[in-house]
Length: 551
Image 1 (cartoon, one colour):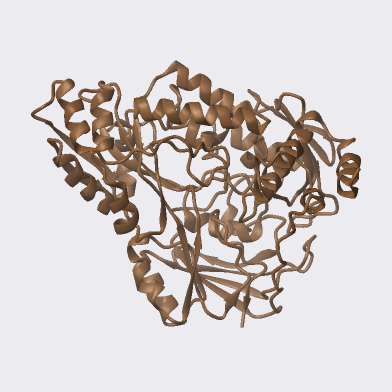
Image 2 (tube, helix red, strand yellow; image 1 turned 180 degrees about the vertical axis):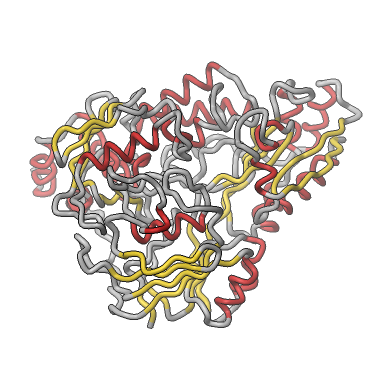
């Protein structure tokens, strides 16, 4: 037996059947090194262990990045936080960019979508993925001197899963984790007893779910006064609508932050942020919209980190309102769109083409053999005629003023005109569009036709569930399909890759046929930094500045 097979065979003896199935997938060539690391990390296998297995069969490790020099101040320009900052309820980038510096998650996603342990040292599922056990890191303290223990994890997720609370994370936890489902085993072990089996649950308690930062069990609110956490930086000062500063935490449990200090400046709009970066007043920005990217892409003093993302814009059609009760009309509108013009024109080539499913090309389970929907005006007109709408129809598209969405709305208006659909545009401020974000009190969820922004996720669980299952809280299309609900449930509970791939393929084909929502493109995330900045991890979740160096 070759040496590398003996190495792998020895390693496999203590693994579960599900963990060994990941190695089988790698040995059979059905997945590459990146997907092996990603899937293995979800199951709780350590990255060094997974890397050793991959190296044993000749799939070498990536080169380590050089470490920056310690000291100095990193200055960041971000959006003004949307209101009082509370990790339980916030939903905006300006808020979570700040909290990410001081509070931490059980785990975080890396650029290749693997999971890195942070406040959790390891995790593992039971046989069907209905219970996940997390071992917590020891010798960790909150900034206030309290020890980090299992009680803090239980309290954190009971807050987030409380149906009577205002947690923004209910969009993730509804039907997945209930209040009381997080249980202490001992001071450094917790179990998550799920409402339903879930094969990628660790992402739900990672930075992907940005409300899931661990707060002390004693947390009562008023976060802005302390920015309490276990993280590498501590609060220095915070001035609402102006800015914030943080200093290195000398008692941090892990590798100490490189910068001595972080300074955040708040900007009400993206243009002043870009001007500040160009003038050297700040060193790094949070992500910028595609429609202003040309301003910085040609600047020799600025580097733009381009990160493949699963973010997208959902164009929903209400399946319970004419003319969208007829799927032929929905299909016709999808066929009217020239996706190459959206990707190459609107997005300047910095996007992946969508195929009317939230399963983006970046997701490993996505079936890339499913035929890509292309513009077909003749077929679209035939479908309109078959639906009794040869003369077209009138409809208002309601959407929000954000990034490339108004441009997308105008292009869609022009595409639809070619098949007789006369679309008028109603472009609103974000607050008016989202309203109270509940049915009956939200232009987003109540409009017959609309376009909505969806942020990046490392796994498609939220995308498959909240906007598309029959009782989904974000189901703006009012799409109700029992077959889809079953397929989504099957995908979510699958622990092995084969089951995920099969469910994903069936989902893609069903959504192409039903077309309740049009997914035209997945824009890249663009993060501009000054040329003298190094060490910023290219992840789509947000800014993590503890390893950043300014030369």
